[in-house]
Image (tube, rainbow, N blue to C red; front, top):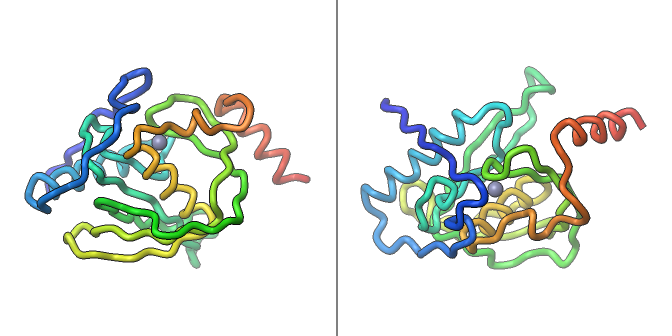
Length: 181
Ligand code: ZN
């Protein structure tokens, strides 16, 4: 298989602030974009990403990947990863209940912040085969989906952050403290 890792667009590139277009025909170009997004997300280390949207590789199409972390029975410290492809995703319902949680973004180096998001969302989309799927998401996966769909609207998490963003170093300190308290 040919890996197609493409460069990730970073702020302040204004393409990140633009709205993406719906995918009309699910064709080879769509499949190529999906594969590029999967390969690029899977290649991202330090930091790893929890998702990636087409504008982040410079394409204004409504395609994104939301990463699902599943418990690993063999190693509790290394969750299993499932990359969920969403083409033309649409949130069809979201819980009134929301919660704050930490977010970062591969397009915004070394910035983390707390964002208030719905705890649960239901999404309608096409999968990597072009088939219609409905996904019920909760917890961190629901957060990732909302973050990625925001990218398709040209919205970055930093515009929703409560207070200021902090660096990875500062975040690590806070998470360490939370773990020990
Ligand atoms: Zn992002």
